[in-house]
Length: 557
Ligand SMILES: *Cc1c(COP(=O)(O)O)cnc(C)c1O
Ligand SMILES: [Zn+2]
Image (cartoon, rainbow, N blue to C red; front, top):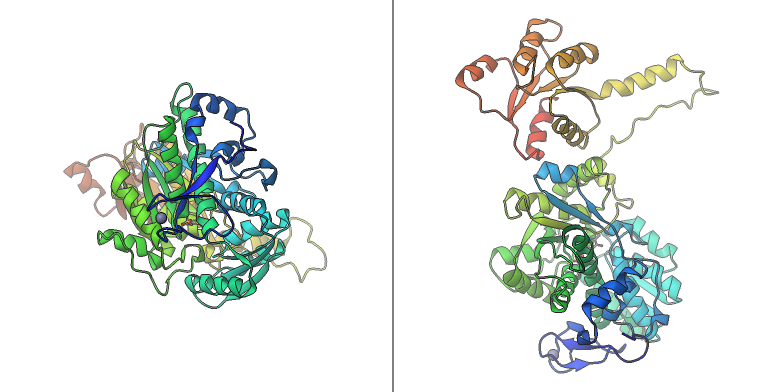
């Protein structure tokens, strides 16, 4: 397994299987014009069992898989410690969706905050190996940021072209690393065209042919890491494990194409015994793949003017990538689905406030897609599901939080900070408090109560108090005078019916809206007893989903 000397890989055309070496001039297949070339390794030289043992002793970054990466000499590797991101088990989101095995592949933890770091380390290392010292790239944001960081490290000059939809913060981040930033007022597809023309006229390298090789090879390392981590969780010995589902939001599609190649190689090694289904999610305002899939077509019609504010996902023309993904889904299962920008923003809040994970809108689209696929019962409760948590929030969250995300207390008129407690400060804080709606939840199942609290908190700033039995609930209601009471019916001692009767009998409490959440099928007599007394009856299922919360929140208005 000596990787530093002899040629250990070649490129192969995925269409006519012509083989050729990787050089800086490669843009596609010289025989048939196909633009997707895949790296092929001498896999038979690798003994999987020995390799698996060796991997354990290596640094946990993606270069630990160097035998299956397209670099000849490891001296050329440009690394910032990327890859090796944690596979985090979701608790709250998993519970609220009724999933038993939901994992978040936390790609936010890369050096520049997105999974494009994988692509950058492999592409920039390969370019360095070929002696490239100036480079043009077109990007909706994250590729350019990652390339800018790795180019800075490699001493390569970068020209980064962005469509105007890209948030300014992302362009500034690329500029910070020393890239020349060019903003094009136009779509991403137009930006790519301008960047290519600029590169041609200046004789500068344009990342085109190498891009698909490097990105497929880079992205496949996610598959290796996932299989290795799941193997440790579900298998014995040196076996690895493929999940049932891999989900990602798609724009260009190189992520899932790379992941698919990774699983194919591992099946070849005998390390895993199947290929995962792919859950491919697009932004509804730019969903050429989903639209073609729904029509049963293998060729997508490009979207000319994407209608999404999520720049990362605004690739209007998916080209070849869609055909490859379509073929994969036909062969191994999977689904294409779309989510609106609003669904994505809601998912962002839920994920941040329940699982403590803050993601950028493009990533939130994946989670919104996950919710769709679970609701449609395409993803089943027992499936092992891995979501590519592709990128960090960065500074884009202004779309998500709206205007009222902070409470301000203005002390600028005061010469000095008032001594506490002082009139001005206290009344300012009281005003803040007065805007916060108070909710009492009475529920004897602690986990259910906490989950309802966390999901409600994901929707706004509510002051939520929990009681675990009817008697404590009634006392709590007297203390906090809530704007809404949510109660279970079946509880030991003082049950939900008694709570309701007590509230309705007390003139000070009778006006408080009551929502009953119950797992029980009610008898006719019980229904009659609730009639006119409560504001809403919700059936408790495995799903504590958006509609449930929507109805709750509506009672507060
Ligand atoms: C690039 C990117 C995507 C889309 O990935 P592709 O595999 O290129 O389609 C999704 N999320 C984030 C954060 C990205 O940077
Ligand atoms: Zn070919």
